[in-house]
Amino acid sequence: MQHLSLSAPSGVILSLDAVLMLLTAFACLGSKLFDRYLTYYGMQSFLLAIAAGTSAFVNHAPALWILAALTFVLKGIAIPEVARRLLVQRLQLKRDTAIVVGLSTSLILGAGLCAFAYLVIGPESWATGVISKSVIPLSTAIVLLGALMTVVRRHRLAQLIGWLMMENGVFLGGVTLASGFPFIVEAGIFLDVIAGVLIMLAMTTGVAERITAPSRQHPEPS
Image 1 (cartoon, rainbow, N blue to C red):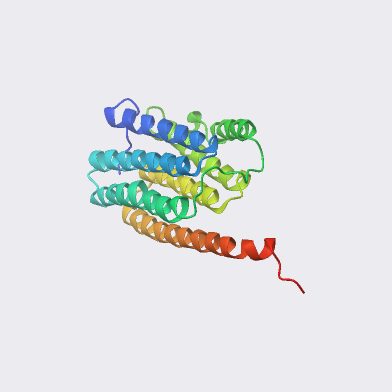
Image 2: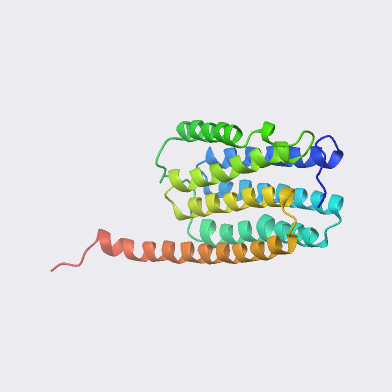
């Protein structure tokens, strides 16, 4: 795989994609609405598909085209829509109240993690003019924001979105750096299967909690 130039049009597109993906992660972290969680995740996945397609075009990598298509269909459309229908609409989830810290505190912590990502994986550690110089710190920041989402949110759906954002951050770095693209495609399919299992688990748990809630509120007389 050839190194993508930071000044080339493809490098500009990848850098812009990475910045917009980071902004969607911040938007998700600063929201309390379940429907917006899924909307921001879908937007982030669309941007990831564009990044994968750009890298596939520049490097003439058929496996990356497969990855871009799978990302667009599975992450951008299927997972958000299935989660919206099975979880948000069926369980009537609206506002997320299971938050450990406030939204402003979450955003401040997220900004600190972004600064940490740039200090640890700073642009000066990469060759001049290479796209990795700007994308890898951003992808690392996305991973850290996803991890923060799983920590500061207690609801299973919010934690699932945080986990999926971490996956998107890893893939953004993968399409920028890795040369073994068939492995990335296989790993992506595997992780999407896990995501489907987690969605079903969250739905089953939510239904079970609704069924058992009345019995806890009105115990049978002894």
